[in-house]
Image (cartoon, rainbow, N blue to C red; front, side, top):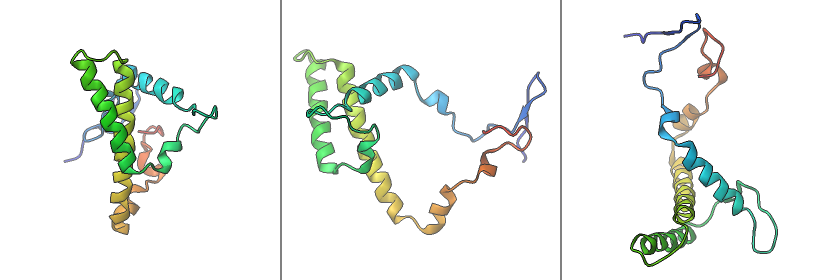
Length: 138
C-alpha cells in the first residue's frame, strides 16, 4: 500500500513520514546543550593545549573508557546517596561521554564484520534523501 503524501495549506507537499525516525522527538536540546558545553570545556588538556572536539573519535581503548565510566558512575552513586557534592550534571555528562565513546568503539567493531553488501547500503546518494516533489532534503 502506497503511503499518502503530506499536503500543507501553503501548497507544499512531502512524502509520508511513516517509518522515518523522529529524531527531533528523541533528543532534548537542553540535555544536548549541557553536553556540548561539557565537551567544549574538556577540550582543554592539563598541559594547556586544546585538542580537537572530535579527538575522542580516533578511538580510546575500551578498558580506559570502562575505568572512567566506573569512576563517574561511583561518583553519581555517592551524590545520589548524599555522600558527595559533585555537580551531578557534570557527572552525568562524563558518563554520557564514556558511553558514547564505548558505543562508537563497538559500532566500529561491528562494521568491520559487516558484509560489503550491508556497508554499501549505508552509503546513500543525494537522490535517496531528496523529496522529488519539493527538492528539499527529508
